[in-house]
Image (cartoon, rainbow, N blue to C red; front, side, top):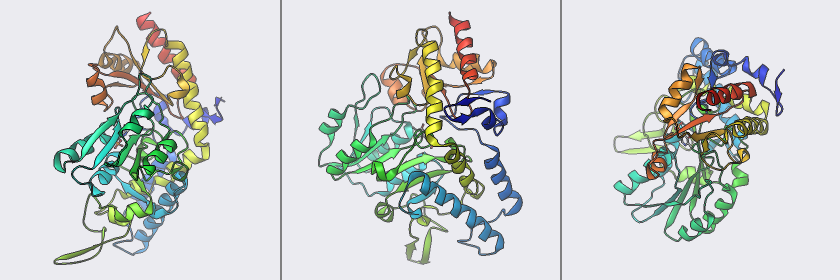
Length: 399
Ligand SMILES: Cc1ncc(COP(=O)(O)O)c(C=O)c1O
């Protein structure tokens, strides 16, 4: 039995058949799906493949509605949100961030701050708002180790700042910002605070009440859940004020030829037929993580990262801080001898699946004139043996 950091990894791996054939090191992009999640998707299609009860109220739609409600409640509990109405489903993190960017009523001259290493999903929406509405947009610096420059944040926070939207845990270097301290500073400034939780929620405890964050976006498909399911969490009063990104059926209480009354949150954000198969499989994904204990998952990833770091720090340049404890489950590196796309192919030939390139943080790489990095990302089903196989291949190639 492989017991690592409180996880019975050998047992866990039985739920993920892909790992029998491949070493899957691309979970920061998309996680594998356990048996319970696959079964829930299948159950939707085979047992109640219908529309949820907002539109239809027959037996099968009632059954689906029950599953969706259970899923929403499990997300509420995962985040320690106050109410289920604070949890709206989206397609992904990207849609959740766009909903806030477009829907919070920003006007010309309002300033938005992010970090200088945002995923495109928390950069492009603001650039587009700058273009279309005339908002001001600035980045707060991070240092060579990936830490946010808190003095720069302090300097840039001013009356004109309406929103601070930051990556919680970076997909580039795995570092996590001190979200709770930042929330205090942002709120003292009467601005709104959003976290891009795509790489934090699946990997570490995230308590929205403790942090006091106003909006949080993440994707369940990076947390064992089905593809195409994301979450926008928002404090109730903000969700009530926020305009949806998409309007239509299911998102309205009533219409006349010249008038519309939108549904309350979260229904107003979920217009149009939804990804019901995905929504029916939210609860098993959240349960899986909760049952293992998110702290155990975090500890396991750091343990694997420590092995990769100790074995390879003399051979490669690590993106971000040297200490694995500060990089979550992300091991992103450069190698003078080989480009990142060639590296990905070489590893792929050996059934090691990783990510090469700019990892959707083009702005950070372009500014430094780099073609990208080699990113290995760990999750709960990865083993020390897999890390050592990767280390061996790298050492064989370049020593
Ligand atoms: C930090 C971060 N933000 C946003 C996203 C976008 O997530 P999605 O593609 O699920 O919208 C990702 C995806 O890798 C990410 O790592």
